[in-house]
Amino acid sequence: MEDILDAKLNLSYLDYKVSKYDYFQGCPTMLTSEKAALAKVSQIYYNHKQHATPGQPIGKYLDKDFGPLRDSDYDRCRFTLYKHGEMPKKGYPDPHDVHFVFPETITDKPI
Image (tube, rainbow, N blue to C red; front, side, top):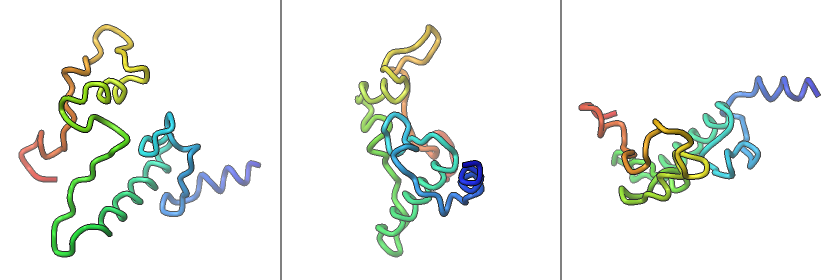
């Protein structure tokens, strides 16, 4: 048993196979380990790149499983921030006040 665990720990994220057991709360783009997350983002990137138009910049990836789909999507924002959709304690951000943006939106340089 220890050999199996050791082999899994030493496995590269490029060879790692993400399974449903790696999903956080059943969401296929929220994962429970760094290795699973690296494997998933690598898979998403290469799949997204493969479907891009040759000679054109690769478009932005929009995660359909995580985060609000538009600014007015309050319910998805609540459940993205908090497991049960409710602020756990006073002082946590109110989902009405949170904006999900791409990094270049908050910087002056494209990323």
